[in-house]
Image (tube, rainbow, N blue to C red; front, side, top):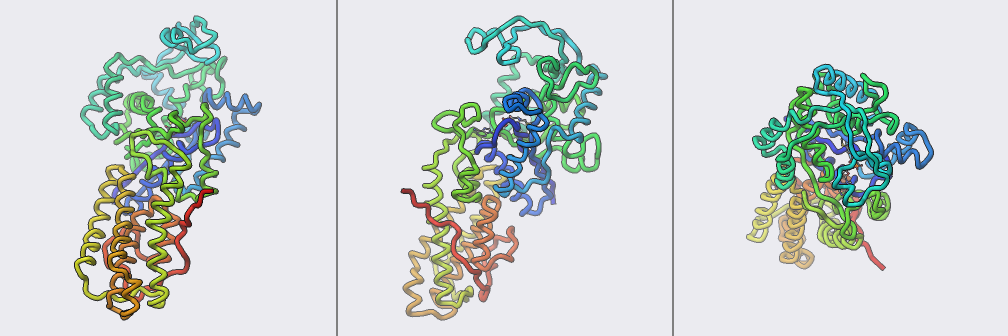
Length: 504
Ligand code: ME8
């Protein structure tokens, strides 16, 4: 048994979650479920990023105190995760003392070691954006109310770690995935790396973790939030638990937050003397009509509506099936319905109904005895033997969309097998145990059972229902060998949980 620790980003609680957030969280859940099924010891962490400018602004717009705002908004995330069957082991909020206390301790340690220093910074400051901007940004004309500002702040000596970070990335090909993102970071690191400003004066931002050695300042939100990945598992408070889980197997992130995770975070860890993550995996964006789905653009798809209309597992399936990891994908309701009807209602759902109805009618609802296999049977047996190996390999390579396609293709093969064998015809002549129809239906059900087990991490609820209908509810999910659904096993009640969606 090995350990598997996986994280999602901590989402800002400035607005409602959309399908972009749902995607990362479902992906983490699928991998966590897969590893649990495989017998690994799993820790799946998600949570919310509750400090900083964005959250303070969102609270100000609603005219509520930031703490009340986050307490109210965090629930939106937790409720959505529950509806989506997200089975996390821990949910961390960056306002919890198990996090804030450790952040302050680290700031103090790094300040005492000289890794953090105070400096005056003079630069162009955008009053409207409330941040320092570069001359180039001002020239591009995107900012209003620019003034020269001189301000004292605290800086982390990030530049000291530039060479060590490049060396680490080059000697650990798994560290940043996929390859394109790794090259992007190496490109970024060819230019000199600046030190990182890790404080904000309270006069312009008060909602944050106070800098322990200067009460006029709060901590920059990223220097606070990134540390959640270690504070949540007992760093600085329970070394046994911490050593059990760290280093993390995967930090899952969207490509929008690659620099913070692949540059700021590892240099912070180096300064703190903590080993680096095994792998940071950046996925692409869900787009809506060619632009990134984002709260500020207002083009978001609300996952709650999709779940209410089509069920959580269908949403999970679509998001996992239609995004190639690392690439962008376009979301439309039309493609969602098309995919659902083709894959889930037709290829999978109809197959379940077809096979179980025949067994109910002709074999008293019990898996019949097989006779000898002919060539067509043996070809399906061969497919059923290779599918689990291929799916396992693809999931380990994080190619979830290909893994799903492999399983759906197995279902299409069962459908073609049934067409070739036509048990609904042969049964009229021979409905004996061990006869042709009996053999076909027993084999088709067993292979359908294997496919359903393989889909379980993606659609936990619906595949469990289908496995019960197939009479396979007691077979452990990782036992995907052929022949485990024994003759005489009784089918469960019910029909496929994927009715066709009709569009007016
Ligand atoms: O960045 N497509 O929080 P955030 C795919 N608090 N994924 C998307 C997406 C889209 N259109 N939009 C958002 C933050 N995401 C920080 C993180 S971590 C210590 C702090 C997903 O609420 C994706 O995972 O803006 C992205 O990285 C994350 O939401 C950003 O969430």
